[in-house]
Amino acid sequence: MSKKEHGTDTEMELRNALIYLVEQGKSISVRAVEKHAGKGNGLISKKYPDLLTEIQQAKVTRANNDAEQSELQLNKIKKLRKQLRDEREQHKKTKEQRNNFKHSIEMLATQVAELTLELHRLKSDESKVGSQAVSQLFSNDV
Image (cartoon, rainbow, N blue to C red):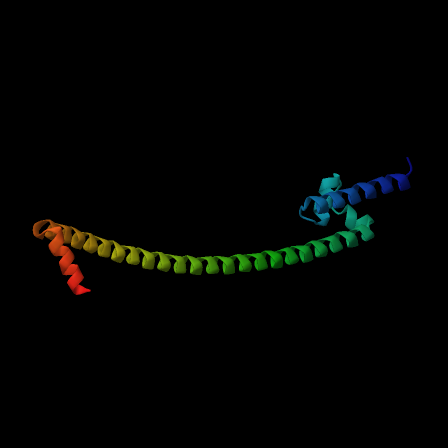
């Protein structure tokens, strides 16, 4: 194998290592590419200036993508916080409504108890006086 073919194989191994690191979302650096390809430290800087430029571009692209992802995540968090605030407000309103209904039910229960008591009192009076006398009482009121 000639030197040129060997150099091409080495460059291909380094490029494949860069592609792997990018695809896997791993840290991108000259040393990481060299290490993943199983090559010596400083090889890229010495022999492959084009690959060095590609690695630097990949780092910038990754940083930009990370910044975009951070912005998207921040927007998502803001949206979720707003939704949580809205749900808390709705919960507060529902709780107030529930308390109002509970109070109304208690008042109605008291009225039912009072009316039931009045009904029993009237039935008791009816049995004491007689049904005819009670009928006369009601007919006189009308």
